[in-house]
Image (cartoon, rainbow, N blue to C red; front, side, top):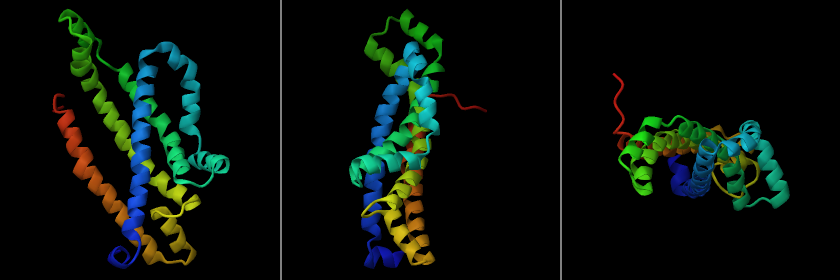
Length: 210
């Protein structure tokens, strides 16, 4: 791994994979959260599109990737689009269930205190939504890491998945393990250096279960 980082393209490949994963992650979280809120708050939207949501949750990622590659070509934009499309139903589903579980007494409390729409959003809606968004982020991110690598193996000119595919062609187990270990280290650093501290901070208002 050290040799690949110093003398090889490991760092450049990691950068390309992380950039693709980051863009897909942000796009899926923003779109999925907005659509999930609509599913949870507007009953007719949920009834009309819930069937498509089930299809999206169970559609194999590899099928989406192959179809988009055939239609649009082997480009970074298509790879990011394919990853986003695969992650989107999961985010929508988790956020929808979170919105459905909101405590009605908080809405009643906001009515009693005649809160403005902004204060209601900031003090009532967002604090209840954030834990579910974090669950969607962590669950979806674990899928995105894997999907990006698989799609890079299918068709890409760089990235960790692309490099692992090359190592596989030469039966280079050492190279495969080096790239895999480097990728896992990045994932662990993001989980323990960013996601968990963020989660502790934003949900500190919730009572600790004894």
